[in-house]
Image 1 (spheres, rainbow, N blue to C red):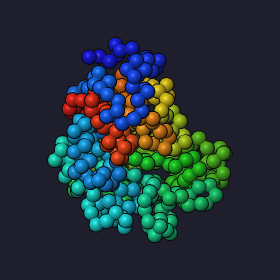
Image 2 (image 1 turned 90 degrees about the vertical axis):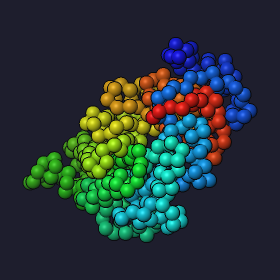
Image 3 (image 1 turned 135 degrees about the horizontal axis):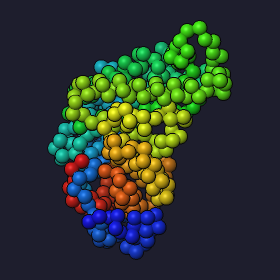
Image 4 (image 1 turned 135 degrees about the vertical axis):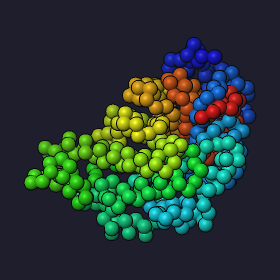
Length: 381
């Protein structure tokens, strides 16, 4: 069945389709909705994934069992950030609050048992969930980003050689020690435009842009002065260069690992705002697939993002649509909205989807609902 022939292929059509099936009015759990979702197509080849915490709910065995029963085939759990790991790492401090467990080993073991792929997610540059002590140490070592007024941000500066060595080493460590299907880069960016203006960045920007002998009023000239555009392009190159180093390290360790990235949805504005040039990563062959975080409850916005992404990808890599029923950016009324977005993503050329994120409500209400139709048959990722 080709869903492009359905009335739901346009934005208005999707609304007509959901209304005609009575799904839109049923915002409650799947058991209250009835059999309407079983009218939908379930392809045999598709990545069906979820973003997740480092822990399973209530444990990884039950999480994998739930996903397997609903014919999902991939999980993207965060297993480290810039200052903490949830597995025994040689390069990062182990979490003080998570307990003495190797969560990555538990996830991969349960995934293998139920046939669900693990794509370990690195929160690459932000020190999320790190202890206060770790953040203080990173600041004292001069490894954190600085804004234009000299304030310290809880993000690793990507020009600091030690930071780059650590990030690349962590990626290699996971690839070498765990049977993961993939590694996903998240928070591979700057937090905003007002960074980084540390001493490492000043020296490297001047060297890379002018060589020696050029005076730059730092940071004035790169914030609003003559070198503003050059600085923004240079920031993009720092992030892209780090992605390249990670890819080389991972592929030289295990060539079969898929390297992906979770990225912002608007690829025309993200390079300037966040230094994140996902299109360049794709064009340079640095990622094996891409997961734009298309978090919106508005289907017109979703369609616009997907069409832009498909155009800029140009068929080079698979597009896995990130959908966010539980994201901060939007809150869905129920699983019917996610069903609509999955159908839209398929119709717009996505070869898979990743849902943010796995929680009790998703397991209880969303998975059974999707399994009645859009994921009713197993699929190969």
